[in-house]
Image (cartoon, rainbow, N blue to C red; front, top):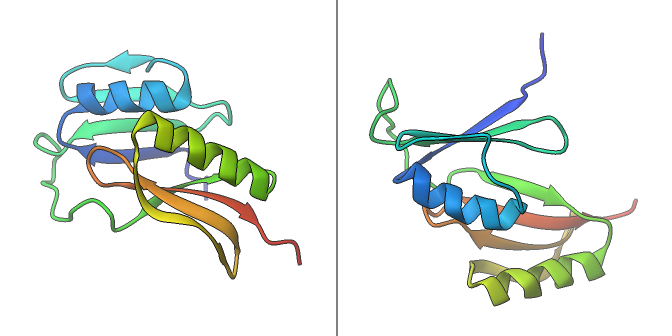
Length: 123
C-alpha cells in the first residue's frame, strides 16, 4: 500500500486560497487556475486547492472537519509562529495552549480549514 502523498482542500476560490497559501508557505504554486492550484512542499508532499464548486463527486462536507498540522521544534517556535500569523491577520481559533500531545495553537484559512501548529510533548 503506498503512503498518501497528496493533500487536497476543497475551497471556494482556488486563486484566493492560493494567494493565502503562497504567503503562508513563502512560495508560489507550481500550477494555478480558476479551478485548482498545487504546491509541492519541501517534504515532497503535494498540496492542492480544488474548487468545491467543480469537484466530482460534489462536496458534501464543510471545512473544519479536519486539519493541516505543522510540527515545530519547541514551544518557543509555536509562540513565534503564532505571533507571526497574528501579525499577518490569520484568524486564531485556539490560542497557544498545553494539550496532552504538546503545546499548540490553531489558525483558520479563508475557507475555515484548521491549521494546527504544535511542538510535540517529549515522553
